[in-house]
Length: 207
Image 1 (cartoon, rainbow, N blue to C red):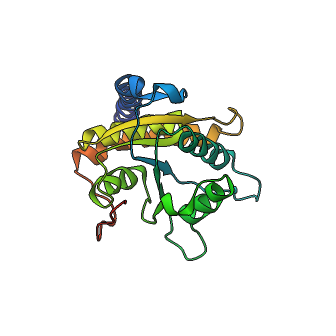
Image 2: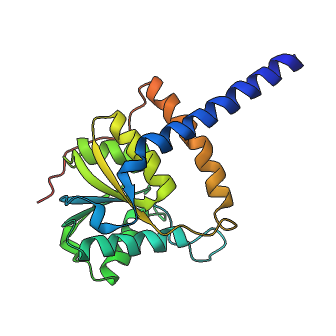
């Protein structure tokens, strides 16, 4: 029993190391924090998170993503946004919070589209194509998140480039980085079992 447990832990560890290496290696030429290196696309997909942490303090992942998205629009690289996040509960609405923040940063409300069913990164990427009709776009989040998003997109025939928002410091982001490490392992499991978004629904045309 002990030997079996040790073998299982070893296999899981090696697989996790491989998953992280594979995702970073295969997406390294598609992510950047330099706007001038990005292609012009109609849409940028901003990946959701809450504006505040559970303790009420400011969530800098959110703040920096909004800043990056505003920079991208003002540079002329994109003309529209899909804000994709979780609105699974009545009093929790990531897309709406992102919209309010972007409007405060000078982005016109009429170029913003909300994806309320972006419960996971996989959902956000596939719904951008299947619901919003975008097969090529820029994704906005922190680098580690963009890498996973792009890998998922590539596995689903979507051409995506990542604009990296500023990251938070290692101490503040420790839990997120640990969670990300194992989320990358789950990308491969989802792919093997052909996992689909929780919801699809009616198509939305971006004008």
